[in-house]
Image 1 (cartoon, rainbow, N blue to C red):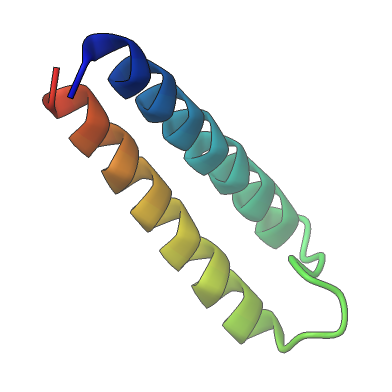
Image 2 (image 1 turned 180 degrees about the vertical axis):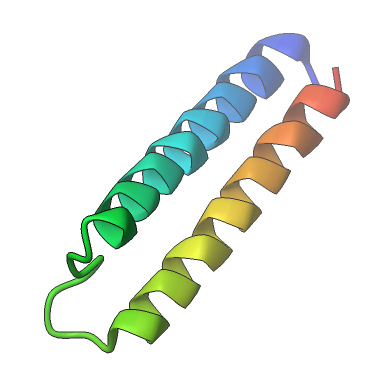
Length: 65
């Protein structure tokens, strides 16, 4: 993989995962729903899974440099 696209993709995945992590933690700490109209446990679980996948993809892209 060329370094330019790998850096861009890794940055996008890392920023999205980090932003979603901050959003989820903030909502849970204030006992607010992460997603409206959805079971709170399910929404936190799905958001946490998306965070883990995004951060893992970002790390993988940076490891390919």
